[in-house]
Length: 330
Image (cartoon, rainbow, N blue to C red; front, side):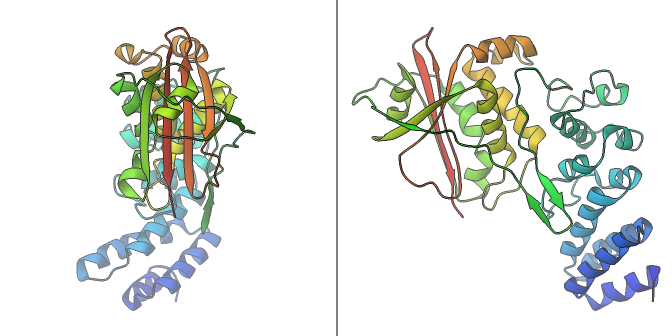
């Protein structure tokens, strides 16, 4: 039996393993009509108590990943692919250029996110009328700035995904001060903690940020750390690490995607630079201000398991520094 008949029979059987294999067969045959039909039947079966949401979600994921742009755009709707390997805006953008998607994507928040996911993959959409007309859900430029990094991008496959990390530089032991003076900068600390909010709220993670008078070692010490290793990094490296953290779901949380990760990195950089009152910040202004700061990666001189971002920033002109410790365990 083939086509809609096969879909109906398999949905009635309710065998999730066989439904997954059938999704493979439909994709191999480029039967996107059949895959949409299967998705719809699995969704409808929920009303009859059949727990087939994994199959429906996987069908939507495969449409986003492998189907032509006109089909992939169909799943850029609220609730679609909720249990897939990543947000469908990111999945779709990982395998489709904006020109393939634009004629079919609705002018909606999810359409805007898909456009921004293409931007983090290097597309310049500043003059694309369809992208420009999308809702301003992120308030970010539709192109990468010269001072931004090549962001670490998710790699999706039919049954797995890979999320590259940001390389930790060689760290050297640093002497931390015994006494430090904390500074009152709640806004910047909130922006830093927000980078790992999914780790802390949806998984096993925790995040803490402080501001202190002095330099980066003083801020690290203000976290209660007694032994640390540290390395100075370029702004682009810091932005990549912040975006990676904010994009990630950690051990058990829901991944947000690299476009929201980029937004969170911009927001944190703007907060530390004292520019949030001017949001959306002109790109060159933020690049200049954040580039004048000194950025560091650090650790507590002990093995790190799971997900981790330990970042420090200092503003020598103001005599202020900030430190973030964010971790999540499997």
